[in-house]
Length: 397
Ligand SMILES: *Cc1c(COP(=O)(O)O)cnc(C)c1O
Image (tube, rainbow, N blue to C red):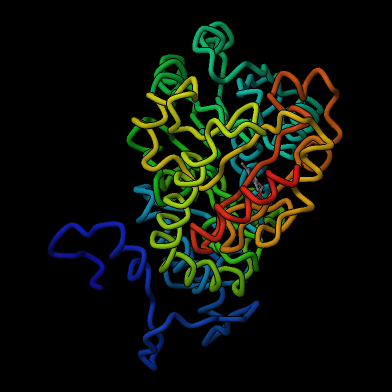
């Protein structure tokens, strides 16, 4: 695909072609440049490259690498941002996006329902360096309005929360943040890059754990920060390349190939997820089925407007509490018990005793993490097989 296409390209096309760099051999499939360093033709060339490296000139893999650059360009094209920086994990991306732009005295507002490690950065790391952090109920616009101040530098939220699947009104929060000139940073994992509308809705910096749907096959850790050229190259990159958060070329190659099939995979997973949600809604063993598009979800209208298909995760609240949840988990035959999500294999997680084990009981309750709650990440297995597996396990619960 030419750098400047004659017609606009759709995401499916970009996911296969964008960012491709071919070596002198003209390979069809993207090459894995598994190299730490790069040779200079002369001492003068080395000097010149250190002074100002061009877009296709590399120095050291922590600074950049052709395979990593292909992945960055491809996901930026998909997300609709000017640029992207690939990181060693999703957490390196969250940490990099926040720490690179903040300094002592700054104020941040964040939605309270956060992935455990994100909460650690906001609640423990940033305050230690003099950044003030206000956590709010992300679904409450009045709370955002009350917390955002003239000196607020950034707002941070997970567009769909884990595991209660609360939905943030991205456009409304972005409007409040932009009114005071704050940067809007969105951890968009649960929306997935396939269904993301983050940039259209006003997000400035979109962060993904590519460990999830981008790899999509449970192999490698990775993350990415998508934003303007100015933010990515002048703010995030200097911090990340000097502190060691860069993505390895091997992982970038896995992610790059993952992007080619991501849209197909994620749509199939989301379709099965929705069928499961519809089939299980009202099941006598379940106090609640949580899926953003179910009419019983308090924000289903917002979720339908903001997120096509409603994602690949649903949560089941077993009426019989922890004992029933454990009996259910142990009776599953296809769905595996683990804590990842976005994998080709369906995965069941009991947040109260694993990912959110260390949260105090009142915080668990505030986040909707009941003893009976099981998070189900829906994979690529046959939908009817999965429905049969889950309903048989519910019978056993
Ligand atoms: C998994 C996840 C992360 C962290 O990603 P890693 O790749 O495990 O570092 C951050 N935020 C959300 C919402 C996640 O699901």
